[in-house]
Each structure stands twice: as C-alpha cells, then as structure tokens.
Image 1 (tube, rainbow, N blue to C red):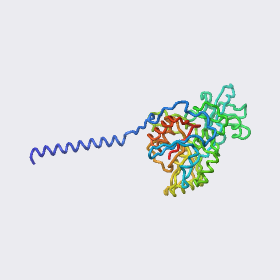
Image 2: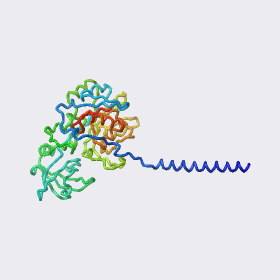
Image 3: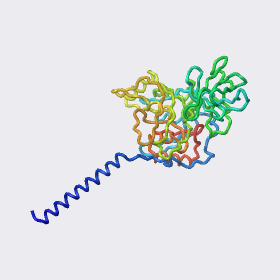
Image 4: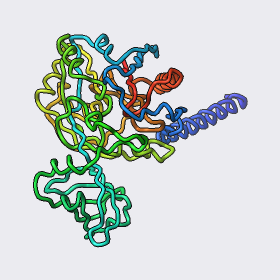
Length: 378
C-alpha cells in the first residue's frame, strides 16, 4: 500500500470516528433535552368589556362559534343551532355536578374579626378543605361563626397551597344551612351581583359538590336537550366536582412545570355502556365542557378499549401534544389567557386554530368566560 493510500485511509478512519462522536453527542442531547412549552404561547388580547358580567336572558340564545379543527374554518351561529352538528350515532357527555353556595362570610369567635371561607372539597364527617381570607387568622384551633351561629367551624390544620382543613358543627342539615347563608362562588372576574343563583347552575345539575360551575353546560335548556334526545343523540352523564383551581393562574414560564389541582370524579355503569356502544358504532364522543373532557380522559381503558365504572381524584393536565383516548369533539366556553383550559382546547384543535378563533371572537365581540358565549370544536 502506497504512502498516499495509507494517509487517505487514516484520514477516513479519523473522520468516521469524529462523525461517530458528533452523532453520539447530538443523540445524548436530544434524549436528555427538556421540552419547553412557553406560557406566553397561550395568550391573546382581550378588552375588559368583553368579559360577560351577567348571563343572557335565554340560555340557548348565546352565540356559538363553530371551529373545524381539521381545516380551521369558522362559522358563527346561535347556541341552539348546535343540534345541527350532532348525529344520531353521537353521544353527548354532561357533567352532573351541582355548585354549592360555597362562599361564607363570618367572624372569628373570640375577637369578631371578619373572615371569608370558600368550601373546596368535602373530606367527610363534616370536615372540608377550604380557602380562607385572610389566611393569617385561620390558624389551627381557631374557631369561626357563620350566619349568626347557624354554623361554627374549627381549623384543624393548614394543608397544601395554604388551604385549611376545618370541621363544621351545626344543628340541622348542612346543605340546607348553606342554601340559607352561603353565596355562589362566582369567579373573581365577575363583579356584578348574581340576581338568580340558579343561572350559575346547569339545568341538569344533580350532585352537590362544586365550587364553580361547568360553564359550557349553562347554555342548555330542557327544551334543547329534549330535541337532542328526540334526534337520537345519546346522553351520558358523569360527575366531576369543579374546584377553584380552575381559576388558578399558571405562574411558570415552562408550562410543563405547572402542577394541576386535583378534583373528584366518578362515572357509573350506564354512562360507560353508552360511551362504549357509541365508540363501537363509530359515533363521536362530544363532551360538554372541559370538566367532562378531563373526566373521560382520566379513565383507564381495558385491553379491549372499553371503560368501566371508576371514581377517584384526577389532576390530569392536557396540553398540545396530548393524544386523546376517548373525546372527539368539545362544546366549551372562551377561556382565560394563559389558562390550563386554553391549553386543553389547544391540544384538541391546535394552538394556531384556537388563537385565530379567539382573535376573531374578539373582533366579532363575542362575550367571554363563565357567562359568555360558546365554542364548538368540531
């Protein structure tokens, strides 16, 4: 072998070795890199006057923006037009949770200092997890009085996020006392007083336990649901008790660092049968609200892809890149900028489609948030 060939051979081997080092270095970096999804990717400009302060007179006459998640096409409708987008093979999934009048104003038993409680989660045996304002007054062992003594509470301990576990004592039935002295826990962006507390309640609400309404369901009337049933669309009901964590802002720039609040859910056999049958027949599973969506996506499927009665606490966090197991389509409201709910709808329809739809909704002066207009992700 000539000297020149030996030189070429050595150079070739050196380059091959160098290529291998570079390749392995890149591979290691790819495998160990942190995925960053920025909070600022989920924002939009919203004029304050578009935040709905009161519900409209007729629930099903709110506006409806229909978004085709495949094409990004947008239609402008009225909510009762939703029936035209549903087929007899489809299943509509409703969250039956009922909002309790969870906001209580009272006084510290020994000093008379003012206190506010918001009931978050029933722990059993008259023990509740509550949000307190001001928190510095609610130390373990301190007692508070509400409704001129109709309800008394003692703080047991301070738990995660600064919430308190408190034990209530009373004469009578707890839910009846709440109905008498409690107020609906409206979101902080609603400044107007609610004249009729039933308007912050779906017409199919059944199971007490929520600190906030599953607001997509506020658009339905009994008449509209009857028409939907008459068309042959099946209705499955689940329960997820909505916590105030729904309104808790995401405070981390990389959203993957965000810790979701947990909420109690359950689904019974009849709902499982309806959903399983719908999927088997190729129908769409259309969730009414992000709470119904989070419930279904929290469920475990068996080896045949079927769901069964389940209950527990879910802290599922759905953001772009998530693969939906059960849900095909979604009826929802317009959500706060940089919220986990905006991230969820972006996961279903695509972030660009959602932000474009929201910007158009702003231009068209749709009403936003809990008492606002609706969107159908088709």
